[in-house]
Image (cartoon, rainbow, N blue to C red; front, side):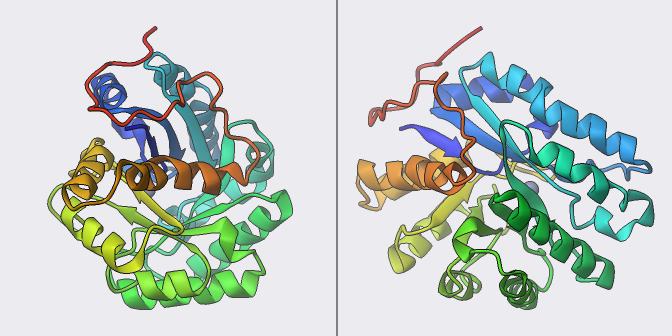
Amino acid sequence: MRIFDPHIHMTSRTTDDYERMAAAGVRALVEPAFWLGQPRTTVGSFTDYFDGLIGWEPFRAAQFGIAHHCTIALNPKEANDPRCREVLDVLPRYLAKDRVVAVGEIGYDSMTPAEDEVFAAQLALAVEHELPALVHTPHRDKARGTQRTLDVVKESGIDPGLVVVDHINELTVRPVADAGCWTGFSIYPDTKMSPDRMVTILQEHGLHRVLVNSAADWGRSDPLLTLRTGEAMLAAGFTADDVDRVLWRNPVEFYGQSGRLQLDAVDTEPTFEGNSILRGGA
Ligand SMILES: [Zn+2]
């Protein structure tokens, strides 16, 4: 199976993970800008990180035949720190770059007034730059956070087809789909969403506008959970073409709206056999 992970933080992963992902069939990914654990105190810390997302990480991924893209934004958590506000001023420079395929992650962490302001400002940037938006939903108070997210998305005037609302679950999938947005699911090893729960959601809601990712952030996570979800889909009776739609064609369609996906250097032939061969190589 060919896999496009639409949300994975490779900055927090080792090179061995790239190797395992390539062997598992991952051929393309999107790495959203997020927080780095240690709070950043100046705009320079952000620009060095953003430069890594458009320079170093694509180079690292290419060693394993993986096409790397990113999304750029001031993340919701650090939107609350006045020292980071200046990041909004440098975003337009990055949103013009190749391989930057969306504005993100934006949205809510604790649903503060500062987050409201920064979220709306960045949705406006997505509209202005004609880019998709990757929207994070809070892990606490998810139902209320998701509803408020959808209200702000609507007020912004952005086409909902350009928005993925991520980290959703059984309780929030319906309102997000009804709003016309893409539904994003982060699969985790032992909390939040599992491959089997994901399969049940796909059985109930279908495959339209669904994106499945492994997130692979600073918490316990596993960059192969996209593959595990594909395997669980097959075990539950979905076809190889269904798996290809969810794990490859859907993310290509969503991020393709940026006009900036660069998949020509990687093997994009669909394969429906087992994933054991390490592709690419330096
Ligand atoms: Zn994330």
